[in-house]
Length: 147
Image 1 (cartoon, one colour):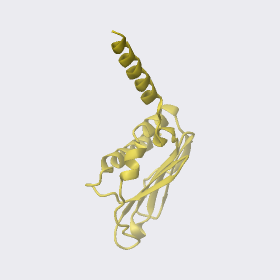
Image 2 (cartoon, rainbow, N blue to C red; image 1 turned 120 degrees about the vertical axis):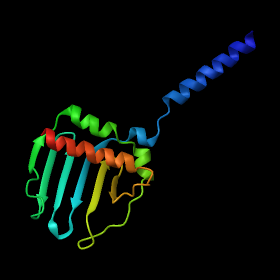
Image 3 (spheres, rainbow, N blue to C red; image 1 turned 180 degrees about the horizontal axis):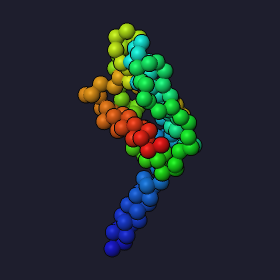
């Protein structure tokens, strides 16, 4: 009987220890996210979100009806954006090749944390973190329609 109590105590202590452990990714706070779509000589669009604001801008003539503004963001919207980002998966995500000024559009994502800035360019569809990046793009595009 005493042996069972000792094993139970050890297992309880071990499980409490494991529950209290945190990885570096759990301690990291996302401070901003942005998405830039370049269209070569046709211009570019830009969306940047922080916990306080949402900014949208454009350059060039290709994006005539793209909204341009800087507004205060709702805390729920910011929380939705950052809750869908997994930093551990983000670190494994690989960029593709930049196409540059003449070779076609680039899709550039920047996620800034308290620890590091991640810049991903043209993430390939078969990349491990592609779905997460695509969801971030969709969330930001949906925010433009809302604001």
